[in-house]
Each structure stands twice: as C-alpha cells, then as structure tokens.
Image 1 (cartoon, protein in one colour):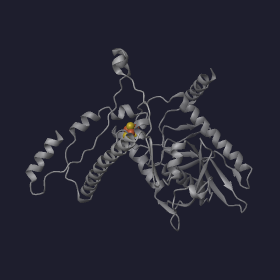
Image 2 (tube, rainbow, N blue to C red):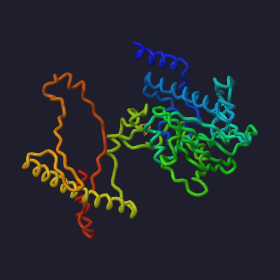
Image 3 (spheres, rainbow, N blue to C red):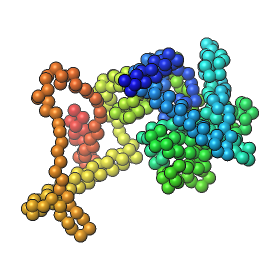
Image 4 (spheres, protein in one colour):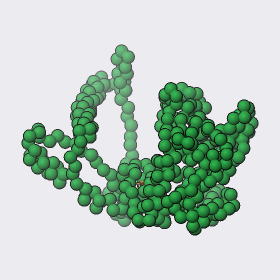
Length: 392
Ligand code: SF4
C-alpha cells in the first residue's frame, strides 16, 4: 500500500514544482555530462519522463546532505552560508533577455547569468574557510571513485563555485568535495585548492572513511593537477548555444550500449537513425598508432582463443579423471578439483503462446568488432578485395 503510494506522491510533488527549462547550471558544467544530451535539452526536445522512484532518490540525496550537515555541526567546524546563491559569470554568447526567476533566491536574473547555489562554507578553528560541496551517490558510482577515477563533473562544479565566490570578496582558496555512498554511508573526501586567476584546481588529498588503504588514488607530489576546468565549462556552454542557434547536434559522446546511453532520457531519439548512419559509414586508412592497437588486439585475441581451447581440453581431461574414479572432488598437492552439479532454468519458447512471445520480444542494437588478418603487404589489390568481401 504505502510502498506504491510514496513514490507516486514524490512524483506528483516533483512534477508540480519541476521546471524543465535548459539553462547553463554549475551542475551540468562538467565534461562527463553528455554534450549532445544538453543540446537536446537546450533545443526543447522532451526526454523520456523520469520515473516516480527517480524523484525519491533525488529527495533522498538532499536529506543525506542534511544528515551530513548535522554531523559537521557536531564537529569543530562551523558550517554556514548553506545554499548561498552566487552569480558566477555573465555569458557573452547569450542575451540578457528574457530574464529568469531563481526560486531559491526569489529574484529575477538576466538570461545570460551563470548562477548557482553552494552547499556551504566550513570554517575551522584557525578561522580558515573552505567551500563544502556534498554529493550523495549510489554504490556503483562511489566504487568507481574509490577505485581511483576522479569525479570530474563535481570538481568542475567546485571550480565554478570557487570562481563565483570571488565576486563576493570571499577569498576562498580551498575546498572539500565530500561524497557519500547512499548504500553504505561511507565517505570519500577530496581536499583541493583552487586559483581562480589561473583556473587551476589541485586535489591535494583523497581520504576515505574506511581508511586510506581503500582509496585507489595515487596523489603525485604537489597534488593531482586539473588546469582549465572552468574555462572548458564555459566553452561547452558556448558550444551548446551555437548548436541551439543552428539547430544542430554534436556527435554522440558515448558509444551504443554504454551505461550513459542506456540511462539517457534522449536515448531512443538519439540512436533512432543509427542504422542508416552506420550503413553510410566508409573506410579509413589507419595511422601508425591506431594500427598498433589493431595489431595488439589481433595478437591478444589469438592467445585468448588458443588458451580458451587449452582450458576447455584440460577441463574435459579433469572431468574424465574424476568420472573414471567415481569422484566429484580430486585432491592434489596445493589444489582441489571440484565437480559441481548445478541446474539452470530456461523458458521453452515453444510452450509460450505466439502472441505473448511477440509482446515480450525486445530488440537492442550493439556493435561487434572483428579483426582479421589480410594478406601480406605488397598484395594491395588482393587486400582491398578481401577487405571488401569481408565488409560485405
Ligand atoms: S543517448 Fe548517449 S550519446 Fe545520445 S544524448 Fe544520450 S547519453 Fe548522449
């Protein structure tokens, strides 16, 4: 009863206050956000509606931020300036009209105003201020960052806030990007410094709440440097504006079948004409570096094939050895070979009525790569012919 009701209420409430209008925002300034998706949005293409559950997860994230703020208030840090609105920059490539209304700041802003809200500022016992940016994310994304990937979108957002805060004579040089795993309540914290004059962000330390041993980041001496994040963000927004005016789209940022495209609200529209595009694609002469990659792939594939065959043949031999001894476990010095009896269930499609089978059918496209050796160099004509036959 409530399990069904709660997401519906969350969905209804969110849709009432939702404002699905594109505007350059700090949260979409990073390089990992699909540029093409932002272009669709800026050109008013409606995306697949969000599920009710999605709004619940957004709401959860805000509450996680509150919970973390509560813990910080119990520490020696002073937490203030929460959700402070800041004007970061004025875009020269956008008109100041029409104006837009910021619901948080309750004021009208020019159409070309890059505006955002910081999570908070924290002040330590030595009266040093730091920007605090909090993110509550799922386990899958958290694990990627814990394993060593840098959260470029979040760092870019921080660079935008640090730049904007200078307009208020708030001379911040340091910040904390605090990421919470919503599933396990673990934290990952990036301590960074930023120089707005040169747009230079340096991650000085990455700390995990479960010990530094768990962190996959190796910070070089002097910190991990990220120059030009804010400049790159401005350039992307300008590009979006150019595409909007010309009613064009950039290339797809992610490949077919990527998780980004699978989750994308524009996925269906974005890939709808791909079959025709694919058919129209031609052939290129690869440069030396790319040819090396193809060669390496071919060699590794050959090893894998050979090793796979050897593995299969050894597996059959071991099974035969155990079978002839009526045993399911074979002990050898340092090893045990175990034969398990398992079952798997499957649907016999012949027993399913035709109309149900048809209804349940789904098609998804994917790309398959094949690398095959052509004849030796010097036989260019034969090679071309063979490549053509292969392409057909
Ligand atoms: S489907 Fe993929 S490439 Fe297309 S807009 Fe979405 S994320 Fe970008």
